[in-house]
Image (tube, rainbow, N blue to C red; front, top):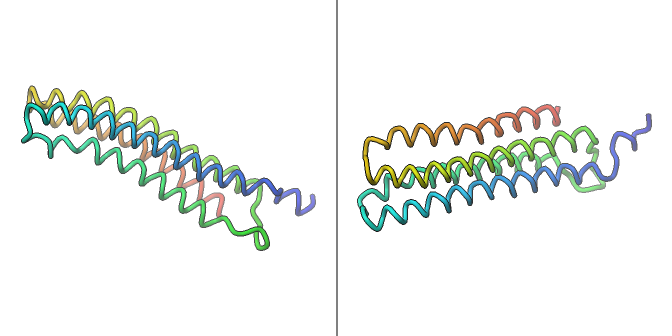
Length: 162
């Protein structure tokens, strides 16, 4: 098998697509979670301004999803080099594409979850303060979906580099 078969010219495109998918889907999830939770927080702020600071938890958790995507994107980008010294195999390209999709799509799902729970949770918290601990627990279980994607992406990136 020739060396050019192992390093096709389009292989770096797959790695760059992994970077793009991680950032696009991860940030869409983070933006949705922030926007949806923000709607609920704005509604709470009208009636109970004293609850706004405790109600910001879903927004912070949504922002963390974008950080997960950023970390994976930087790690993938660190393995890409300009064409003259590039020895980027098709295997690495596929692994980096899987890394990006893993963290991106789980970030999208987690952001949706955090947004829905955050919106309803802060509104319920305004009515009944005992719901706060339950809301935070549900938000944590939503956030952990994105964390699972980050862990899988880091494992895949380790396999691609080694």
